[in-house]
Length: 299
Ligand SMILES: NC(=O)c1ccc[n+]([C@@H]2O[C@H](COP(=O)([O-])OP(=O)(O)OC[C@H]3O[C@@H](n4cnc5c(N)ncnc54)[C@H](O)[C@@H]3O)[C@@H](O)[C@H]2O)c1
Image (tube, rainbow, N blue to C red; front, side, top):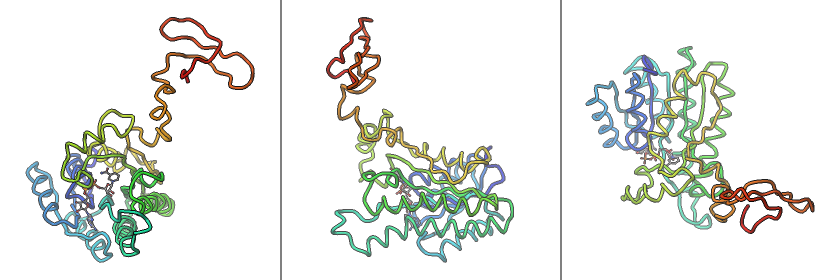
């Protein structure tokens, strides 16, 4: 039991990544507070966890409202006497459509939930943890959308970039209190957030969205959150861990655009020397034959 005796609050715990984390953290011995805007799914999560024999409870929470976030942390103290782990995970897609059509109001809603919600969580979670004097672990769900220019809707991506920096900056400030702050940057994970009512089609599409030949599962993110919450991560703080089946590693996607240039598909191995005038030395892989000229499409 990696979280025995610990108390965790998980925002957005009623669905998707949050729900998987509720079940995983509880299975590892934590008491868990499910905090969600959606009381129906939040209560359903609690019922599912209680059926497994876990000790969890629900508090209706809008992470964009400071008094709610404060009450959420207080709820952990009232229900279980302490707060060791705060997983700021709640999220929405927020504003979509062309930036030239995006209203300031839609920008504000998106930032309120995704960025301000995380700020408020860190602020009030850290206050409680500092008062306790036994450290703590804060985990924030960012996204690969916060790391590149085409990973999600524009405002969402900007807010997730803010979450990554918030995690790093607050990790520095809170380290002297033994409070660790880390972010997780999930890639394409099949959840109700993005399945548009057709989970199977989403899984199929996501299985082709990164080098890893399968779709991302909520358990993949919950497992990373468990590591960051546990004592195995005692020296890990200020980190943004990418969990994306290699989507970001793939970068410009050269081997997708030019399949013949992919190392995996290459029929040749060896050294090329560009415009130096020196000879290339290439070996045809299936024959051991050697070549001095670079064959078309070998690289
Ligand atoms: N699914 C993905 O591919 C993916 C990728 C990268 C990042 N993320 C992030 O992961 C997190 C979890 O998303 P998910 O995919 O599990 O989605 P989900 O829709 O299954 O779950 C999100 C939960 O957050 C809750 N929520 C929304 N607004 C809230 C608010 N203001 N206050 C409290 N709760 C609120 C919802 O009610 C829901 O239960 C989000 O931050 C999301 O941006 C998801």
